[in-house]
Amino acid sequence: MVAPQIKVNGKETPISPAAPHTTALDFLRERGLTGTKEGCAEGECGACSVLVARPGVNKPTDWVAVNACLVPAAALDGQEIITSEGLATPGADGTAPTLHPVQEEMAVRGGSQCGYCTPGFVCSMAAEYYRPDRCGPCGSSKAESNGHADAAAEADAEHGPNGFDLHSLSGNLCRCTGYRPIRDAAYAVGAPTAEDPLAQRREQAAPEPVATTYTQGDSTFVRPATLAEAAQLLRERPDAVLVAGSTDYGVEVNIRSRRDDLVVAIDRLPELRELRVGDDHIEIGAAVTLTEIERRLDGSVPLLADLFPQFASRLIRNGATLGGNLGTGSPIGDSPPVLLALEASLVLAGADGEREVPLAEYFTGYRQSVRRPDELIRAVRIPLPLSQVTAFHKIAKRRFDDISSVAVGFALDIEDGVVRKARIGLGGVAATPIRALAVEEALEGKAWTAENVEAAAQVLKAQGTPMNDHRASSEYRSAMLGQSLLKLYAQTTEAVPS
Image (cartoon, rainbow, N blue to C red; front, side, top):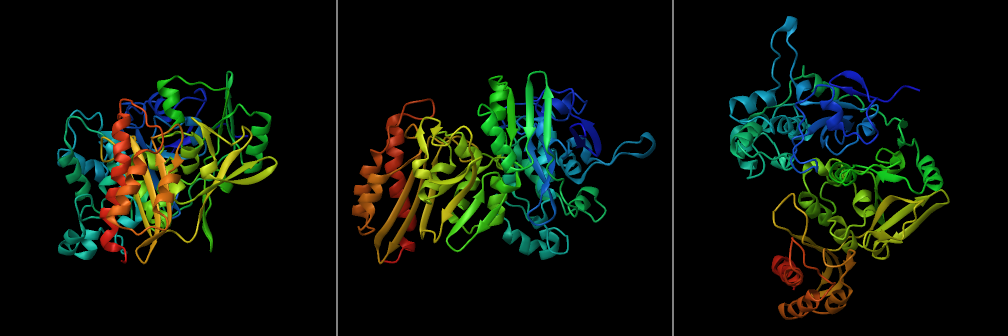
């Protein structure tokens, strides 16, 4: 068996002697790649971002930016990563390297002052630079393929004329440069050339998942090859900790010094990586990342399309999964209210087989559920057809990249001005995500009028048992619940047939 190793900037690098809990950030820095920085150790600043070669949506490989501070180095066994140092082209005979186009634009447009955050910005920007559908059909940027006038018309406050999506930088923070020159650099980059080795690498398959067993001292990191192996391992060791994108577990390791005897990675299990659209339901594998879901569904589930831009940052969504968000059982996770409104169910898998549980019956208490220790979430099923009127309202202190004070998912069927069906999911107002059953009953069979909505909004304000904490008071949370239904009515009235 080959010892666990990672291809870093084209060079195979053994993971040993790093401990199984060692993050990719610490692993890289200990090997002299100090462009990767630690800012927050929680996945909120992006100073640690690196590129990972992952199975692509439009090409065999996508270069995906992730938070190196959250991902265990052992989870990258057999994978390829590029750091900020690996983007430049080395100079011949000791001469200075040639800057990558992203690095060049950041330099000439004043996108760096102290430089601490710059390598992270560069890696996130490079991931967007290499996104295949950012460019025109001939490989040119949108500005080049459509003409600058047309491109300017396509651009908006969050997209450049070159197709650059500023949301790709939403997980990166800078405290001294200011964002305007960074945005200018992002909007100035063109398309990768045919000779660009990282662009060429997209045409080849991404590395296959590697079955891994890595032990140092009393700790072991395991990546099973199949779902059956994972289920058997959980039967033998129900105390094992499951990780997918590590966006929650990584914080525990860094901030709370969490150390576990056995960590089992399920993020690359083929059985958890499928996404299928059938006649009567959509099935989303529990280990498909949120970014992959967003791009593969391409807006076909509007409520999920509303959710994704408001779920943390692009760096987090590149690793986070629905299975992980539901598996933690957090009452303030953003996906449960949406999935409750969509009447989703979960497929739980264990050594004895599978069972399907409605999400509305899954949570049993604070961070508790009906999932047994020897089970894992294999998939999320969303029934079809979808409701006509949907919305996701997230109340938080920031527009993006923040934790919800209150989250509400709406899914309504309104015919001839009457609410035939209402499903409403709530987060942040109880010990678990909940369905607003009383509000659904108050709406169904009633005309979609201001008077009836106002009455239902009063019922909604009384749902759950909101608490006081540093994010919001219980009174504020209750008020926002009622306001969210009034907002939905204001948003949809003109579009709903009377």
